[in-house]
Image (cartoon, rainbow, N blue to C red; front, top):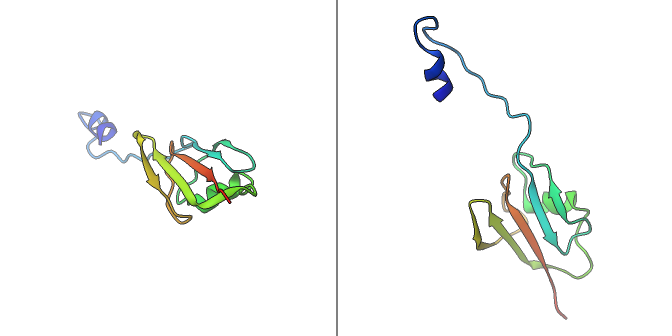
Length: 99
């Protein structure tokens, strides 16, 4: 809307504005995955897909202790399922199982 308002004026009566996202902020995955680190975000990404991008779970990984931290509120821990949607900038933490 800001771009539209900036273009609309004396010369352009009804400008058409299209925005294409070239690259999203990465998401991060740590803990019990084969290749922890930052990865390119893809729209519609789930926790399960993020784990696959990180090379899968380690032998000690707990599928019940998967936590997600949103970029805007890193202090709030969300208990995430494998189907939970990940956003750009989010951090996933896979805890170790004990037995």
